[in-house]
Length: 176
Image 1 (spheres, one colour):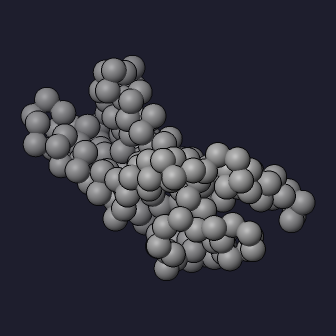
Image 2 (image 1 turned 90 degrees about the horizontal axis):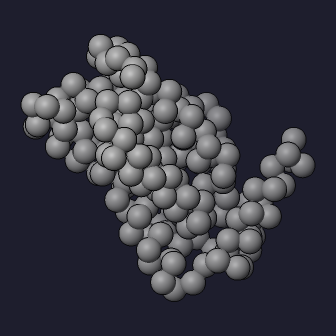
Image 3 (image 1 turned 90 degrees about the vertical axis):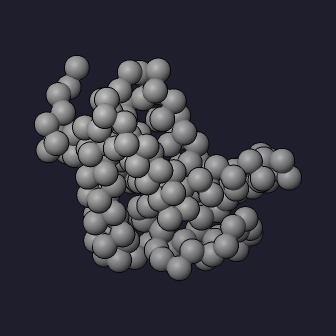
């Protein structure tokens, strides 16, 4: 199984040794900080709930965040108990404060994709696509900063999108 994950180690060391730089580090820190404690996702839910035209989307986005939180933070992180990459890769330099929980799946990524996927399903693509792009940047920032393995982020994407889809259907949203 260790052979399967070897590509993650190589990719993370490539990012550190070939892509990281002072400007990129600041940009990635800012991007990841947007989703600290779910801030951007919660703000998006509140903004949508306050606008009558987008209230149903806001309801679905809120439900998606709750579902994502339950699955990621209360179930999978503790059940899988995957160690963070900076604990396993001796040469990897962590660029943010050390998180207190486990690595799999990425909660930042899951929350961002839970809300972005609902926005993609319920709003014009001129809003939904940029929301998915921002969620992708948040996920990438988690790898770049050394906090998550790529498969942690991929898990967050899958769970976030699934939570978004389920929430959209539960709240009566229709697919186009």
